[in-house]
Image (cartoon, rainbow, N blue to C red; front, side, top):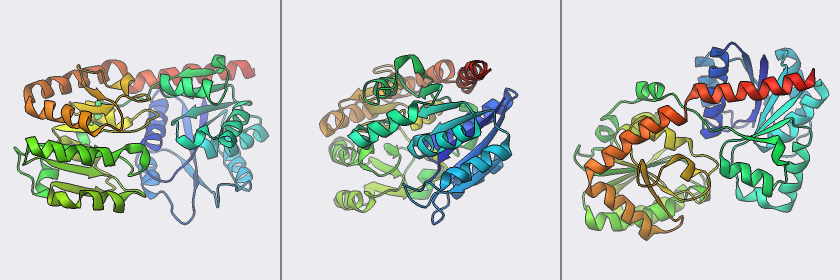
Length: 371
């Protein structure tokens, strides 16, 4: 089969990384994938294109000049025709709207994926748009059970149309990219100093203010502890100001294209999100056998097994977050065992091959129905 993945690309974040991983896995199963990225001409997603090129994936860019740029539809249509796609798979709201329209014009069956339950999706206008956009779709893939419920209950997509397929990750690929010791050397952090990390966009969703507040309490128990925050976003200046009293104990790394190297030196990965469609960063940590402290929200309990591969705490609760972090830093043997069980869980439950096979089943059903 020939599948065209249509998505809005701003950077190499979780959804974009998933699309690239899925496309390569589908190719390994004997299918052809083309990537059609909706991009802001002022901020081209260079990292996405470089990664696609390195993976040997054909890609095209369709300029999207604003949120309401209906002129992007014929641009997508042109790329769909040149790719000779048999199925259009759209990802994220802009592609779900404009990509679905283009696919209809091209006479192609549409599969849509839901990657997040952002707060704006609960607004009446967004709910109406996504409900309308889902009508032509033959299947809607939700990346978690939590998101499947959101798609059904909030967007009112019929349950019979929704299928849950978790993200998958190849631990060997993550391990191959990691350079243990490099981050501590870069930051001048001693090998025995407790190091907590967070990786993600610095936005409200990720709950980083609560982590910084919790880290103040962690330092009371572990004065030599350090916190490394990898990522960038609209809250960076505000977060840096919040962390300023802690001096060099909190380091903001900015956007990184070497997250496996960042994670390789962590004692604990913290995911204090307020909501989360999936949380691909958790799988990366599991690939590196790192224990995880995460919020008990959205999809995170589907990934992190509380008390087994990590600890789950209420979201927005710095005291509970600090207690969990302190518990793991105080018991390195327990933390290591959790990390090892996380790696085993990844290899069993979240494999790339399993993810690809489930998508192929969806595409096959959609293709047969078309015939």
